[in-house]
Length: 129
Image (cartoon, rainbow, N blue to C red; front, top):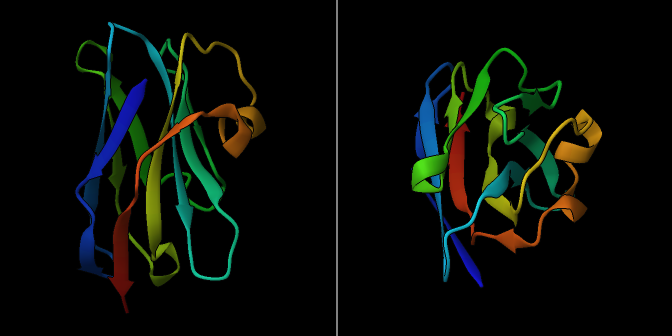
């Protein structure tokens, strides 16, 4: 069993920055694959960023150049650094984890909801203009 929890959401003005963090806890030592997703009211959940076990990162086109995903495998923690935030980034952000190693996934795979079994409850990010 894996529990996933996100931290760090909040409200910022357009152009501002936020850092989200996510911690996975499990009954045994495990490696994880990670993804960040977001969902706005009335819209489907969309992949924002994913990271391979070797640190290769994947990004949705809408956030490329503004968001950075990184991981601390020893602490089972992943971060999402969000810069130059825009009002359209407003959403509930979810961290997702899958146990095991991830290598050479395509971006579509890394940002697919179906790739991940363990999800946090989400943290709200609101960007005002």
